[in-house]
Amino acid sequence: MEIRRGEIVCLLGGNASGKSTTMKTVIGSVRPSIGSVWYEGQDITNWNTSRRVAAGIAIVPEARRIFPRLTVLENLMMGAFIRNDKVEIDADLGRVMEMFPRLKERRAQRGGTMSGGEQQMLAMARALMSRPRFLCMDEPSMGLAPVLVEQQFETIQRLNATGITIFVVEQNASMALGIANRGYVLQSGRVVLAGTAASLLENPQMQRAYLGM
Image (cartoon, rainbow, N blue to C red; front, side, top):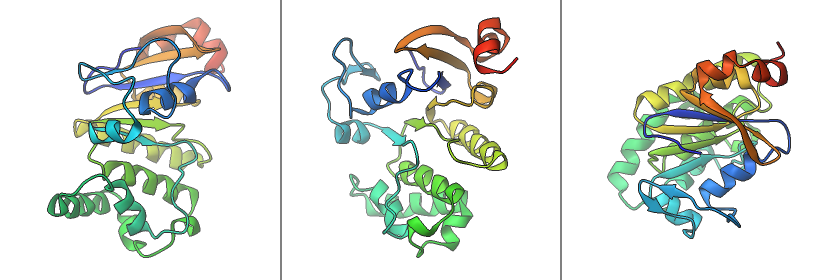
């Protein structure tokens, strides 16, 4: 698979197709037995996760995975854990609070007491605090009401418009392809379809298997 600078690329497939494993391989929590991972012209296959984050890769994990006992502000600061540029961290904190006003209102609230949609906002904002150039999002629509799913994908587009390259693993194929430049479809760990979002939306195999048409 290839993800080009400035794109939104989605990875689609059913349960147990290998989507999350692929995402974990990109972020470094899973090592490939065959093949390699390249980022900005470098082979990063043997880099640990913290080194990848420092290089500009961040993840919004499946099921959000916030720190439930920490406050909103403490969760956000964990996103900047590897940074030491305090002035810039404060500036980024202001920017994510402006992007997600609900988090500003609840900055002293424990993350675990927030709704699913609010926790998803927090997970995204926490990832942004590492100042990523490449953002991985694992099942961002999981467990959200339809109206929140639409808001989530609108936010992904806004982030991409700021110059962040985005890789989305998603089961909601129609929503993901609606915002993506290109997409890949996995079955049993193998890419079986690939192309522009428009071509995948029009593909009869895709329509039957994933779009309910």
